[in-house]
Image: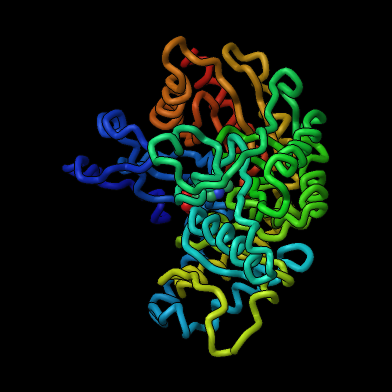
Length: 447
Ligand SMILES: Cc1ncc(COP(=O)(O)O)c(C=O)c1O
């Protein structure tokens, strides 16, 4: 019997108090914890051995599915071979190999990769590179950063500043000064129950011209957006929006950063969303899918012209004063190389593209279910907005997540009263049907 499916002696820890669970209502969780002991392919297994279908690739990470043999073997071998070399002034061969492989996947002249350990670090790195680049190219007055409402860029001070989620910002002071925001692109009246990119909304990119008129281009370093906002409820970009944003950035000499922490590595049917939309940003941040969630790893892919601008001055002097102790950690690099092999050998990005139609149809089959206000799909992503209970925003979705996990053997993510689905890219057509059948049952139960 495979390890993952072997029945387990219950291993609920005696003390749930010490661990402060992140982004989680701790008291509710500790009353009825959702504890996972093992995983294999499309499934998690709880501590008492129950199978749970993974409808969210963990947290948008495990695109290759769980505990894949070649990735596990690569990590084990690397752990036995080289644990850790200094990340500054020294390196190791697999760091260069993985960087070349990622650069080859990225479009255009996005040729150089700076490694970090989380999406939040990747975002802060990209923002710092934007500021430093403007400095080295003699435009040091460009210090303003532009994000977008309903954007999520992690939890560092840079990320929460350009991010557009009030709950993530309001407790933490003003964070970075000199930040402004574009409007978000969601409009239910215009786009409810649209599959893929909505027709309406490209003109919202023109708001960047308004911000330029307000602040002057000479003060603006960069614009950062998720090609598809994920964590605030899956907001696909309106048709033409990202292209328009690129044009306006070019017109004013503003760098464009795509935060592809979620959309990178096949989620939308291409290696990066930049490829799907035919738009080459100046930097791409990535994380999660690069190692299919197995070892923390993230980074920023930078266009050649930006990298080259730093490669001046005396050769013994550090060009960018930035980096992390665990940048390009050997375990993460080994996991990343093995993961990219699986993506290539199984054509998982192509598989996501092929399944997109079937996925969207299955999601839209829930239209008309009581309490469903909107459904959005893009690539292998879907969001279902539920009507909120009076005075209990978010409770209906929270209940649906609990019921799905404990009673239906299904995991998905929630944000507010939205259910978000983003399965591993190895999902089969039958499993797509199974997921939405279960989601439908759960929604009817919590109505
Ligand atoms: C678009 C985006 N950027 C950044 C992050 C932050 O990544 P991490 O949690 O690895 O710091 C996330 C996490 O979901 C994300 O979706």
